Image 1 (cartoon, rainbow, N blue to C red):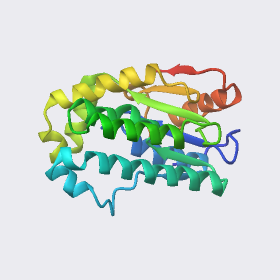
Image 2 (cartoon, rainbow, N blue to C red):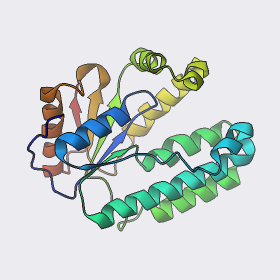
Image 3 (cartoon, one colour):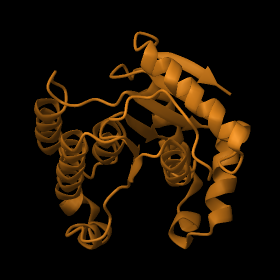
Image 4 (tube, one colour):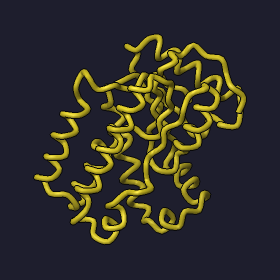
Length: 223
């Protein structure tokens, strides 16, 4: 993708959020290339709990979520200390607001463990010293469009997952973003932009610029 001239701060942090299958990784890579920023992806390799978790959800869900929280916190701290522009695939806020809460609601995490996790999250993240994103890009779309993408990319584990799970996750994201107040939010509809189209990427960048220039504007819709 051709680089696009922009007015964003050289140490900007643009974070992407959205449910599984909306294209966060693709947009992270393309947006980083067009901005001349670095891309930060979720660490999956080397996770010491992932395999155990899939064999016993109740036993290992708390350990898994603690691991993800620690790794994403370290990633956030590293990006801030480097002082470079970053586009980040998935926010730390989704860990507690979506995934840990999902584990708790499904009975895979006790109230004691969830409260401990939540207290640690607040101590680490919900304070004035934690480096917040300049803009959060929330990628959304109709449930039908997202399911089409999940099936078209052909990951068997996702295809075999019951539709009820995806619907629950989808609804949780809708509720979560309505209450998100940590930084300005740009809403993108997956059917109304194209990562391979330069004009489409330019529009997204201009919208991000506008939000960074006016941080008090909490939500701007680009559909």
